[in-house]
Amino acid sequence: MSKEITLKKVLEFFLTKIIVGIVIIGGLVAFTEWSGRLLLEKTGISGELVNVLIAISDAAIALFAYILLFRYYENRIINELSFSSFGKNALRGFATGFVLQSLFISVIYLTGNYSITYINPASFLLPPFTTAITAGFVSEILIRGIAFRLIEEKSGTVIAIIIFTLLFAIFHLNVEGATPLSVVSTAIQAGLLLSAAYVFTRSLWFTIFLHFAWDFAEPGIYGAINPGNSIHQSLFSGIVSGPSLLTGGQLGPQNSIQALILCTASGILFLWLAWKKNNFIKPFWNKN
Image (cartoon, rainbow, N blue to C red; front, side, top):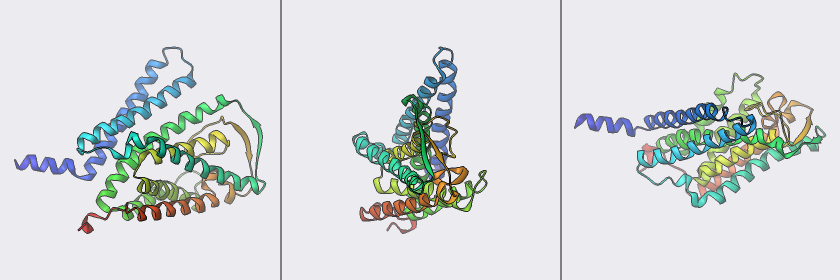
């Protein structure tokens, strides 16, 4: 009996859940990627279409694996991926990500440092779509759905956001071309903004589509640098020039001063709205 109780406690420990979730879902995505390419590349389908099919498969397996795993592991309804709230939260999330990236570019344009030289065919949107859908679904399910959610449940909202903001700052200190501005911008965007968006909506659909639109718009629409991918095709062929403070330099507009200001303001706004909705979670030692 004591062994069963110990095993149950180990399995219910939040770090165990994080490890199990990331290993199972990450492993299934990796297997889907490997086996899918192995099968599809033998069919003669074009490389671009293969990438699209693999990206959609990765997103689908991550989504349904998360729902099934935590439905049984935690014995609960997966409200953060409720299909009844899909439309509203997906649309609001996509709009948030797209508008933020458009604002970053607008500042560069209004200062005379961005110009469109050519408008390419719509087919040029396929590679950035492929990259963005994988990043949006897989990254957010692993980071926000598993790691952030479980740490927040244990430590509380405020501490969880501080932890994630610091972790993203630390992880990006040694990125090639990193500057103090790029490190702080990334930490605010990935640690504060997306986490605050989740706390406000309690919906992974919102953060998934915010992340998707973010990674799709910057390189895919505006032809700007996105340090998270190596897309070379975009709807607009654009020229970005000027001071790195405004352009983000070799790390792109998301690492500019206007990005830092707008994302900080958006993150604080989301937290304020979450506070008004009583969406903050107290740490385990202060729940009574």
